[in-house]
Structures are given as structure tokens and as C-alpha cells.
Length: 33
Image (cartoon, rainbow, N blue to C red):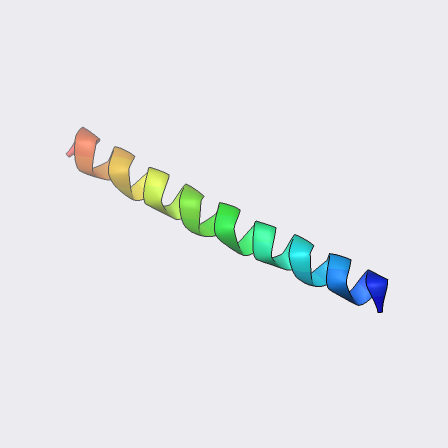
């Protein structure tokens, strides 16, 4: 069960980082026009 919990935590981190990078890319697109 411990491995499942760690996998879930890793998945959440990946999802958060992915959404964060999408926000960063969108922000740079706005700045560059």
C-alpha cells in the first residue's frame, strides 16, 4: 500500500508541475504578443 501512496503523491506532483508550466507558457505567449 505504501508504494501506491507514493505513486499517487508523485502523480499529483507531476500534475501540479504540468499545470504550472502551462501557466508559464501562456504567460510568456501573452508577453511576446
